[in-house]
Amino acid sequence: MPITTPRRLSEAILSALAAAGSADVTAGGEHPAGAHMAGAHMAGEHSAGFEAAIARLDALDHALVSLLLAGMIRRLLELRHPDGFDGSDVQQVLTEAVRASQWYRDSDPRLLAAALMGALTVLEPGERVTRPSAAHAILLIAALLPDQPTGAAALIEAELAELRRAETIELP
Image (tube, rainbow, N blue to C red):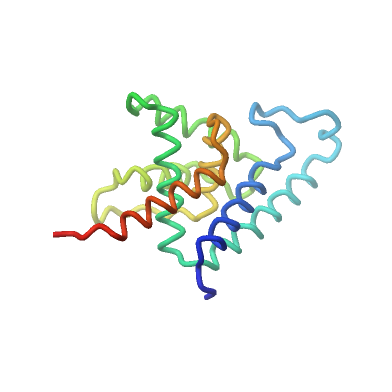
């Protein structure tokens, strides 16, 4: 496994987010002009590009990638819902993420929900759920990101800084 540097991690996440955001279908589910002719072929190519980007991300330190992606999801939710997050907000986020990720052949609503619940740490210790892949966390981030004025690179840098800060705290 290659050494996971902040730069390599940032580049892999940005690449995966770019691949997730380059679907031939808009967030509203409508095809842009002329895209209807390409149909499944374009969606297949898009999935292949996304899978290649996820493979690069999966080659990095899993624990670090998971911490960073979970932090990004939490930060985006905090920015989107500064007054708190309730059950209807969870449903809305998941509905948007499922709709936005329909182009991805391996998209699974249960894994999107697991990525969200894992990021929020609402799973009980020892609770058995299917572990979401980095792909589902990226899909969730891609669905949340357009609402934010800060770009993905700034979000990644903020989370990397938070991870560095957390490493310097001495636990009692």
